Image 1 (cartoon, rainbow, N blue to C red):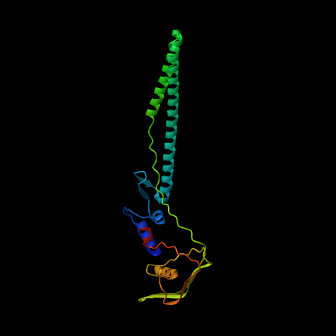
Image 2 (cartoon, rainbow, N blue to C red):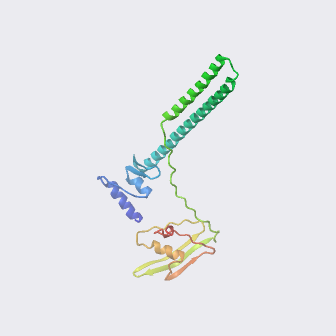
Image 3 (cartoon, one colour):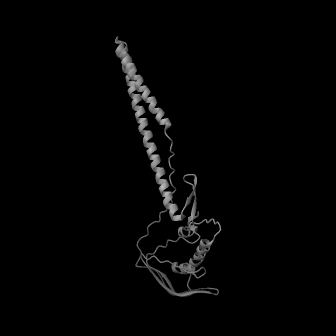
Length: 240
């Protein structure tokens, strides 16, 4: 995990390379700034696709390709269903004609009438066979596989007080390293980003703010009714 300065240095290094370079990353901004092609291993569709034009172009082209795939399959499925309905209707007419011809055959001495009904039934049978051949000649379009989606729900906690957490002139000492003094107040609905170089004390600051790391000087406190939700750097809560 690089800090912002390290990430900027890596971006400049990769962008300045004149050799062929393969990058594997989940950082979208990094990919958008450094790549010129994207090789996608599409697990859902069981395909490997190469896209040109960088990461942003890849996202647009992939969405367009998936939309076309869905449209092509829906058109194929609708056409096949319509032909099947037509074939079923034609077979129904044919069966009805055969039954009527058999029912009338016993008492019908009209040869012309019998011939007409027989030819009509044969025509319906021919139409049904023709429709079936049309179904068989359709270019099969496979149904796109359902895309994998990450679904995560975080339970809603009751509303806390106006003040969520406070540090007042807080210091944390770990050997030669000293964090602080730092004063910070996090209020309800605040979204605070903590930045700094690796080793600057970001994790220590968060630990003190959450009450997990005791302060050696100053004060640290949580507001009333505060329930802490945390996804740590190692994402331990997502394992087991």
